[in-house]
Image (cartoon, rainbow, N blue to C red; front, top):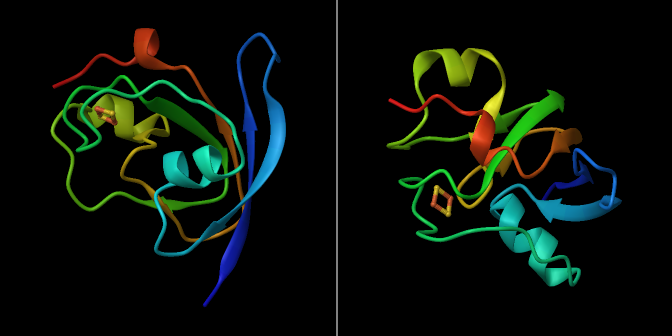
Length: 101
Ligand code: FES
């Protein structure tokens, strides 16, 4: 079972840490397992509270209801539902930067 290294950074750098995340584990959950509290609300890819931006690496987000095409093209994802498919570097706390659908 692959486990990826997810490097999470906040815009103001109060978060700058690497958490292990299984390929079948939402990134938000992996952060919580390491004691890192990231913002969330619905946990079902519908509100955008957990939005992050993938700076490098890849994630899989099968179903989501909040991000627009432009958001997805810019690398935004819902950390409550995104599963890693490689090691990643991700900017957290991106709710205010997404345009939405
Ligand atoms: S917590 Fe609502 S979209 Fe992730």
